[in-house]
Length: 128
Image (cartoon, rainbow, N blue to C red):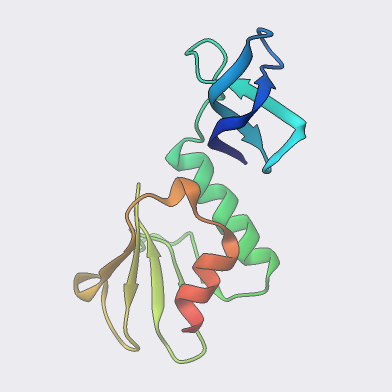
């Protein structure tokens, strides 16, 4: 995952264009050894789409063994259910939470932008 940081103390070098200096850069997994990019439009990493983020989160949750409901003729929004019956719903761009026994109409926003969320944070949202 790329993270934007300010290289104010040291000089960073962009792996793509070779720009060298202090200022704003992107680093991969918080390590300059893995990758560094400058913030110029041609060099900055492309952001994950909502569809890619939803698929990444969903696959991670399935791998963790949580009960999930994805495909059904009547199911408009996929969801996972916690042990207490609370549900986390996946809409197109956001993640919603309902109390045990709640319907989607009762859901509250848990994360408004799922692109920067990890699988552990979603599982934490269900199990809290």
